[in-house]
Image (tube, rainbow, N blue to C red; front, top):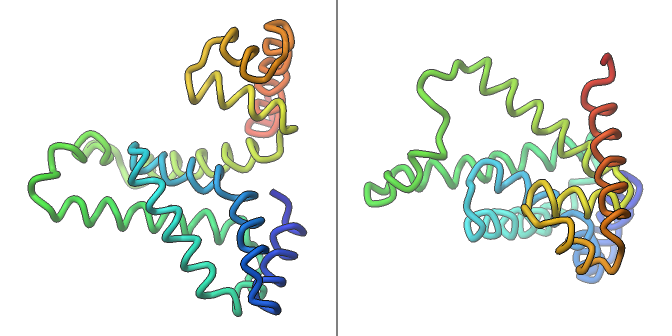
Length: 182
């Protein structure tokens, strides 16, 4: 996701009320928004609903989004806040308390620890978006989706050795972006 592409689609949505631009923006940003929502909710359906709500709000606010200086941070915060609001709403419903108890931060976690975790996750999402497409896809399939090397190789029509090389490249690049001082 590049800032130029995002701004282009937002401008088209604002100036032309272009639903095609919204679709392209959706295709560009959906995976990232979903990962952010899932990080907080740990539930596929809930994360999907939150992301769709965010896209609806973006469409509604399309006239004013061009004025935002840092869109990447704005979208991260928007998705995070929507996910946290969803968690809060679920916590108010007594029958769902047991389901969400494992998702909420431990009472032992300090606000500082929670904030550090969120900041690290935000950096991870940004770094993941900066990987080359094939590296990112291999990394996500193996590390997040828990697919085997053979499954990824078959799905992407590449060799197992290529999967391994792409994963090593992704890990090295992520490490360099997340921990530049090491």
